[in-house]
Structures are given as structure tokens and as C-alpha cells.
Figure 1 (cartoon, rainbow, N blue to C red):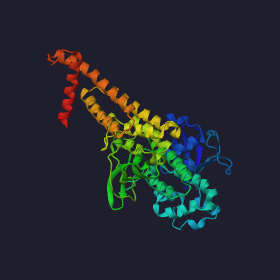
Figure 2: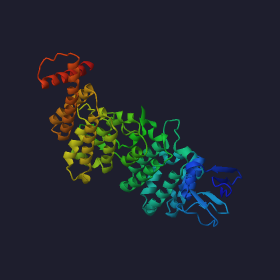
Figure 3: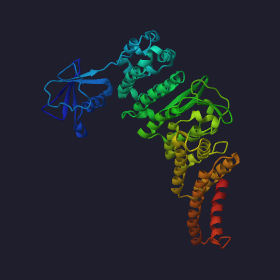
Figure 4: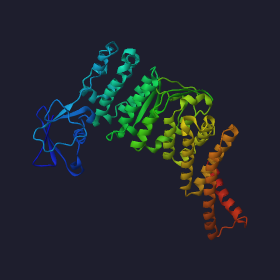
Length: 466
């Protein structure tokens, strides 16, 4: 493809494909501010969604042997056309370089032309090649080429055209859900788990941050468990580590991608009903688990539990940061949700932070606890309904009693409960005035007793609605 700036009209760039098709890119409005070669590459991809993004493109100037750097200014006054080249990052060459070709079957996606991968990128994340990939990445001869291979793979993923990255397939899955499932399965069978986890996380995090990624972040996918099919689940749930309950306070940890989930929340507005989803420990292993017992936990409760010392190694810093972000997004009712054990998310956070101490992972779990507490108090202060406050107070009282019965630390929850009761009291004062103006006769003449009567009325209304 050749690009030739139209010198007679600064607002357009002529594009001629190698097949001879003439195109015209109009640079109007904000597009007149395009300055760098990278800007131009991205503009071409935006104008033609089937074309790859900047990482897969080179622009050549007068010297066809050297590509123009991404940071270079657009040569608008150049008399010679620029040449648009789609770069094919040959991963097979990397494998050959380290003498590991035996691990790549003939039907592997690695042999596909880049144009085929652009049309159906999910081929890169099919599970039938997992065993060979595990053998390849675990081979000592390939140790030096692992980063080189992953860097080239990342460029292909980042270069996928917009039309491919936002595709929702007939089975409801997307390229993002395929990546999450594939990389989880790959990492848990790889000896150098931390190294692979970091590389996969970086690739997916950068992918989610692409400005043209939109619909798939809030897409709902179907999760299958052997012969059990579940209703569709929000994609962000696939970022959570697998957990399997074996009894009270026991579970098997899997691999999660909290940094990817955090990137999804930072780059896109995650649907609010995502936080209503109730986690059941045994079906979190979407691919090969089975039923045993389940607990009705929201996402915060799922990440934080269990809270015993035997589970220190299945919570990492990224999950604590994710807890802070989720707490800011959840509604007050979601934050106050009590599982069948009678514990809310703050109860779990207090119990775990008390269990591990302030120095564990740099104190990030103490920060998570304080964030949940602050979010609850902030949202309580925004409530203008006495009945709602009575409802929240009732939930918090039950959670506080359960935490005390279990011997858990509950000072933070006590602060939230006090803030709720204080807000309830203040609203009751206003309602008392309205009742007096309407001629209501209180049972007592004492101010505090009248406030108690207002509160009792709303608590009774709460009981009647159950």
C-alpha cells in the first residue's frame, strides 16, 4: 500500500493499495492534529477496520530499507509516496532458531499466514495445542527464546484489526475470554509459572487497554463444566483464580489475572450488575471441575476468603488492589451482602488482615480493608431514605454479631455500623419534625424516645416487608 500526501489539499492523504485500488483518507476536525507516523498508522486502521493496528505496520519513506520510527513526524511535504507494509512476525522462525521445531505440529496456528490470524484470531488460543506449547516453553533449549517468542506474539495480538478484537462468536465467547482461558490452562501446567504469568498478564493487560476494545469487556460468555452448562457469565469473572471447596476454610488455589481485571475496570465501564453475580466455589474451575458444596459470595467475598493462615499463598498483591477498585464500584447493598455464613466482605477483609498482620505484602491488605470500610461509610452518607438505612443497619448488625461469634476482628465493621446508626438517627430527627407538623402524637414526650419511635416504625416496616 502506498501513501502519498496530497500537497494541493492538506486535509487528505491519498492511499493506493498494491492491487491498484485508490483510497482517500480525509483528515478533518481533530484528525488534522495527526502528527506522528504512529498517529498515521492508527488512523489508517481506524478508517479501515480490517487493517492491522500500528504494531503490525511499517511505513517506509524514500529509503525502502528503513522504516520510519513511530515517533517521527508525518512527512507531509515528501514528494515520494510512503509505503505501507504489514509486518509478519514469524514465530516459527523463533522456534527454529532454538532448535525446537519438533514441538510445533503441522496443523499449529503458528504456520498460518498473518492474514488468516486476523480473520480468526481465536485459532491462537485453542486448547488442543496446549500440550505441545507446554513442552515447547518448558524445553531447556528454548529458555533463551521464551521472551523473544512472547514479545513477537504480543505484537501480533496488539496488531489485530478492530473488526477481529470485538467479535463475539456464535458460542458467546470472544478473543479476550479465549485468551483468559488458554493462558490460565497454559500457566498452571508450566514449571516457570511466575515468569509465564507475568508475560501473559502483560499481553492481556495491554490488549484490554487498546482504545478500540469495547464490547467484549462487558460480554457474557458461557462456561462449561464437563456435562454441566451454566448461564452466561461476565468476562471479568474469568480473571479470577479458580477455587475449589473441600470443606470449611479449605480450597485449592488456581491462577488468576487480577491485573487484567483491574485494567478492564480502569479502561472501560464494567456493567454494574457484574457485582451481583454470586460465586460458588466449586464451579469456578470453568473447564474441569465438578459440584461439591457452594457458598453464596460476591466478588469481594470470593477474593478475600477463606481467611485462615493456610491460604496465604492464594492471595497476591494484585487481588488486594482489585478489591480496592471493586469496593469503589459496588453499591451499598452489594457491599453489605452477607453470605450464608453471615459475613459481609468487610468481615472477610478484617479477618484476613488481622490474620496476616500489617507487613504482609507491604500492608496492601490493610489498605483493602480500609478502602472497603471508607466506601461503605461514604455510600451510607449518600442515603436519604430512613427505611433503606434501617435495612442496611439490620444487615450490618447481623454481620457484626456473626463476626464476634466467630472470634473475628470487627472494629472496622463497628465503625461502619456506627456511621449507619448515626445517619439513621439524623434522618429520624427530620422525620420526627414532619410527624409533629402533621399532628402525630408520640407515646413519649422525651426527644430521644420520639426518635426511637421513628426508628422502630421503620424497623417494623422492614420486618413486615420480609
